[in-house]
Image 1 (cartoon, rainbow, N blue to C red):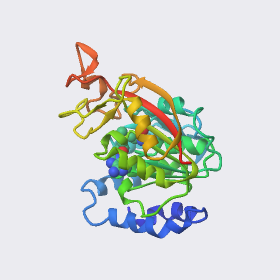
Image 2 (cartoon, rainbow, N blue to C red; image 1 turned 90 degrees about the vertical axis):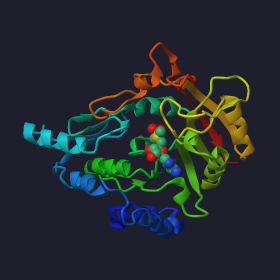
Image 3 (cartoon, helix red, strand yellow; image 1 turned 180 degrees about the vertical axis):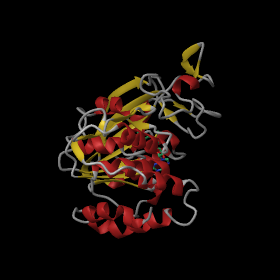
Image 4 (cartoon, rainbow, N blue to C red; image 1 turned 45 degrees about the horizontal axis):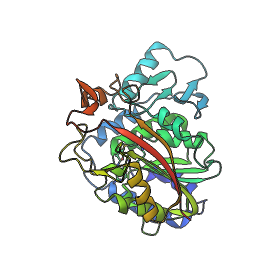
Length: 326
Ligand SMILES: C[S@@+](CC[C@H](N)C(=O)[O-])C[C@H]1O[C@@H](n2cnc3c(N)ncnc32)[C@H](O)[C@@H]1O
């Protein structure tokens, strides 16, 4: 993986009003992909290179299993090769995908999150979108399916970047990419996005209010933030800062009540803040599968009281909010 991997997308981006940031984005990618980027990268890239050539039939971006069907059914040997090569990119966390009949049954039913937000957000047709912490890009495909003009996904976890490339070997989009960047790597002054998504990221940030302020600056005036994060089921302004782990995760810093989150957004300058969903994460939505064989949500809950995490905290509840940059 080098800058050339991302050139078709950057070329497409340079035909939008984000063009002034193309060069700085390219430099940020090159910095991230410097020597020793990740020890497993050569193995993952070999897997992408070993994916069989297949001629695409119908592309599916607007249904839960994102993917592509074959014009004719695959023979058993080709299907096995496709499955095994995709499996070499384990663990698959976000999905599901269906690639030429191979169902990648991911840890997360990310389609359920999409279903909760799809009708509540500003229509994406023709919009320039940034998805911060987009994982392997599952929701980006759904955004394209909803008509977005261009989706810039960023995620610093290289395995997820490579998973995107594996999927894109078959879907061949140039108006969606997952760049190997954290939000802190974005070029200074980048702005002008119509919609910015930050889902599953805020609770990992040590400075959550700075994160919201960064998202604000990335939007054009009138643009929309779609925010999803863990929340505390409490009516007043309260914030949980776990002493140690939260649901076995080491890097969870702030879990605000919805009331507190609304105030954080307003203090950062957002208006029109709307809570569109609050839901306890179910073990149907997040669970271990053949494609993610490590521990998952059921293992992180108290077996005697699944309303609590193993550490005794309230079990994961997530809220989805939208807000506007005036
Ligand atoms: C819980 S996942 C959420 C994925 C996806 N947005 C979703 O809602 O399903 C959090 C993602 O944030 C990414 N991440 C971690 N640090 C980040 C940073 N500094 N900037 C952007 N993304 C980051 C992780 O690699 C991970 O893929």
